[in-house]
Length: 130
Image (cartoon, rainbow, N blue to C red; front, side, top):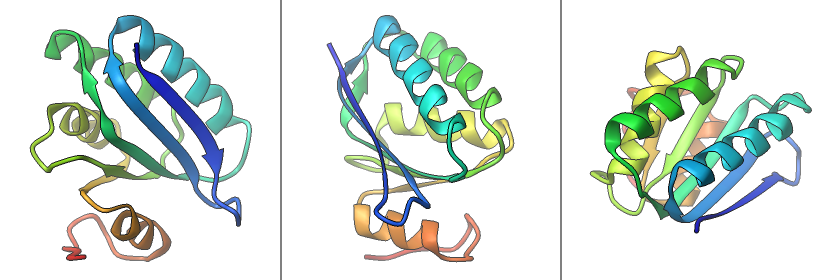
């Protein structure tokens, strides 16, 4: 079963979401509900999504559908996704879902670079090299 941790950055401007382990249908449902409750209860509209320790444990079409459903419920925001590698399916599913539902999202392999992008005014097409 997967794990999830939700918190705010020390200055309360970034929501930090860390997920790990197998993300099956139950983990998606529980995790997205917890995230949405937390995210919608405070004003920060930047998200550092550390998915470097997670993997989808369900068919990709279902994972895409569930991710898109979550993203449609979020107000427009900027999301930096930290992946264990750039071609990680779980992270790419979330980036796709965020992008097609109107959010600015970018993949990183380094937490520091992800946080720097969130704190900058650069757009998602800017290349970051750590």
